[in-house]
Length: 459
Image (tube, rainbow, N blue to C red; front, top):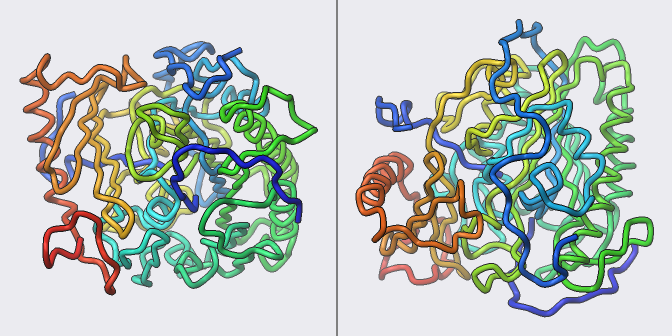
């Protein structure tokens, strides 16, 4: 195991490693809503336009017969401001090219702002506040047979997952439903930072698992669902000699990490597409959360739900689907139903999101609001955010404090608008109340102290 050499200062925000939180308003309410950078810590804004040609609406194409093989990759801590969104550094050349042959969502959202509240909900298609869990920062999830891996396996689909961080050890419950669940050799929990480099080793593990006839039917008669979590952009940041040297400040080192990870992600996908089963391979790439570099005084991730922490990349590639860019906001809550759709298994009635497959094949995307959910735990007070079109309502504590931003124009959330646009502020609060009431707040299991919780309140 290689050791990282660069330890950065700054506010310690411990994060073990989820994306996106869109929300089916109609399902809950029966109604339809209205529609070279500085080396300093502060990163540039994400422009409203992506440089490549716009293809927001393309002619719908017939969808090939399911099931597909599905490969799901999460890149830990990957921010939204990347080259395909106007970031001037070439930090992810492979993903930038991949954006030209996939459906790219430049306004996608993770479910929460750190791994322990993002990954399990993404696999379950539910929000963390409504799932059975304990109250600790490194959250344990209880088995309620809701993970897409469990549902896929029960439908005869082979399920496999490989990871390289201690949070993925079985004690935390993320091993639910996987036929083949492996961790990199030497994986152990680290409660302060990620101290090893493993994109290259995870690449090798993924190829080994995807070459195993027990996992992947060479004849293509049995589909599979595979998930791998690439960790290296996570703090602590390290320089890789095989990637460009962007400098020595936090964002510089992070960019070097992204470049390193991009290489190994791209190598895995290129290899997978060349396999006999690659002709029917659907690929979904996203992040479990973003990363802060001093915006609002926040470093790393967790604790808050600013755009830098919860807006993430999302790519969906399906053979036969057109390449396009869809600027309609979407979230990781849509991924479990999307996986189910691609795998040809029934949708779970408990899913909060909706399959993105129709719009990937050219159906017009219907606007719907997105909920980001960061439940209270021992180290953090509760945070939520509602995104509806260009607007975002940020909610603190038990709905004690609200603020409004136009994140379509103001990625940095520099201009608070509640007093400037009071009618919009009131409408967003009303919409949030309806959605939040439908999700509810499930009490945690166990005796973990919950930061700022009222007496006897266990959520």
